[in-house]
Length: 99
Image (spheres, one colour):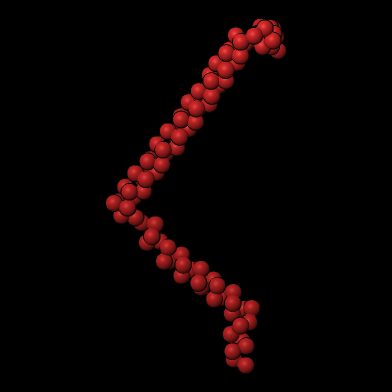
């Protein structure tokens, strides 16, 4: 019957509170990092930020390249025949009107 009282609700809440307090005590020294560890983390963060900036720059360059390539393709088609030139003049008219 003593083992049953070990599993009662009152004992569980005391044990979990004590366990949480023990975890907090153990976690405090971890927060105080050595200078070398802090420097490595800062370097890693800076490196990650630089990589993300590079990736964003490359994505923007690729978007611009794709847009330029699409424009070149359209210009090529417009020069091929009168049928395509009609679409180009409509497109140019719309851009002049701001539509």
